[in-house]
Image (cartoon, rainbow, N blue to C red; front, side, top):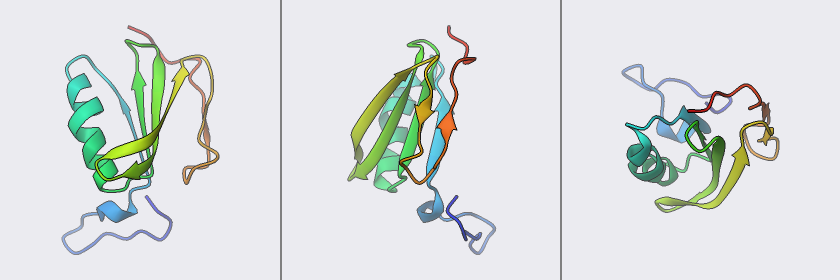
Length: 101
């Protein structure tokens, strides 16, 4: 959530305050994670969307949302660090212990 974000009336967060979404993909959710969810997050202008895919053994990092898609996709194999320091997230994600299926 963005710094200074506050829940709106009804106790829900505003989609405009979401800065980062990370998900672990499963076989049953792959089509949704790479399709409708990715499009919804891009449409909502979520700056960074990360999918950890244990079947491919890599992370997909989507940045620069435009319309219903992201302009930039970066793929990082498990075992290498995912550098998000140049994004609003500002961290490095270690993947050396991520399991593979």
